[in-house]
Image 1 (tube, one colour):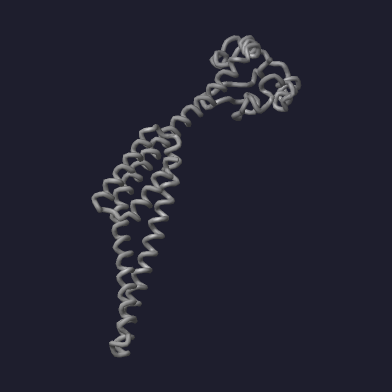
Image 2 (image 1 turned 30 degrees about the vertical axis):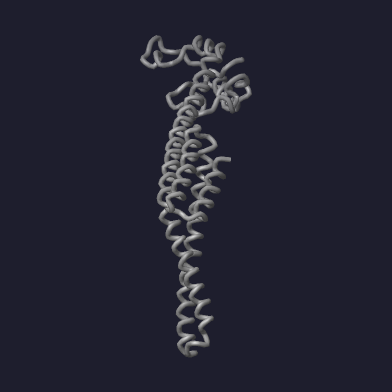
Length: 242
């Protein structure tokens, strides 16, 4: 396999001596079929048409020109052209993979840290949610009791109290629905990232999740979370372990 003598190695890659432009030797005629290359054909025709010139006996430029024998030697040894091109591509993607590895480690640590912080800070949100749920039940019970006493209080008083309780109940329900929706959105977002990381991380993360499950049992026994909250969190953590 022959290599075009006009293929030159530069710091930035390869260059065609005929066109003076950068070139990919693997996507052109440079290796193997350079005699069919349009640039080579044009240069050969121009050389044939040009009058012969006698080279100077000695000049400074002569030392910068690759001797014909060297060009022929390079053409006979294509690995001299192929090896640098291969090295260039491999080096480029080797560096890219290293950067991607660094980015993944940073992403992984960021996701794990966010998940850990969320599991701690989420407890305050869930306690607030439990309080809102209790308030909703209190207002509903107050409305039910008011209905039982309807005949014992003036109609105007009854309507005023009922309107006030229904307004408060609606406000609390609206806030409860908003809290539920926002917690669910955050859970979905974080869990999507965490599952992605968990599928490639070491088993230490699985152990951490199991410890979280054990901690839930303690919180339930200590009365710091409701049974409803406990079941919900346990279900979420167990889903991540599957």
